[in-house]
Length: 307
Image (tube, rainbow, N blue to C red; front, side, top):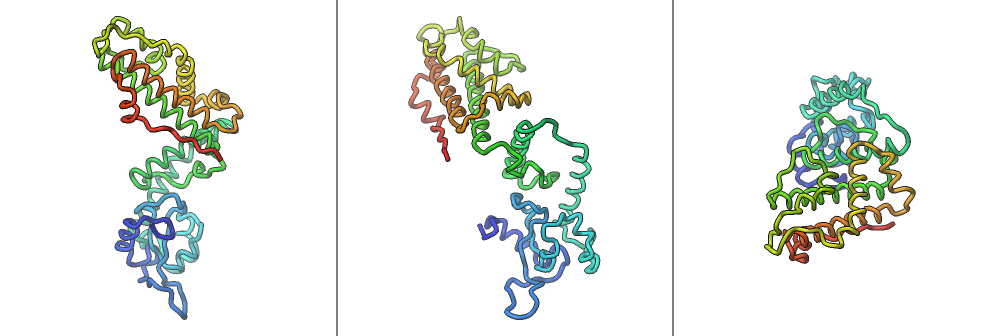
């Protein structure tokens, strides 16, 4: 990775592609001349001014003169500037990678003009956090999204705190992990579920569905271990939190965390409850009674860092 945070593979690819300035088309020099103008020196450029978008669609090479002129201006505005008009730079003369970026920006602008976020205070901040996660994850998997431009969600001051965001991710991960295990065990027991069975009913009726079912290890009928009753209230809280997130009930979700200075502790509570639930499900069904082997195979301890 170079000094601008560009991976080596991407740097090699862009260097090979951009032999001339992607804006004005002049042949560039690699080294700074000891004397004279430096306008032709090759520089690294984010076509869309968002340093978090590091992809072949957004990283390019341009001359120092164009880079200096464009600065932090939006591409759509800069292309109309006197600098570009004087040098004959327009939508038809720019490099293909810039043409694609320009078309993408225009398509996105048309699609997003009527979109606005409803809500107030942290309600909006939480929504920005989710959109930021989705956008970041998609870009890390596929490169820059073709219809995404720098958004308000990329501004950390407009999202919930990093600690709360981490706690919410833990809640989501723990709930999906438990729902998957419940479905997996019922399937192994031959229990048919409706396709629209949701997490709450799945958990609350789990042991009822297995009331007359023989354990997989042949040691009698399935039954919840006594410890399950102690754990059940925490699991129900997890269901409520997950449902609050799924149905955009942000006020209830944020109220559940209250004004805790360390929301990660609450997230860890639900994660550990799910790990215990998996152990008890295994014990009560004979699905996998080798707890240490199960935990080593599927779970790593969740570490919460406190600042």
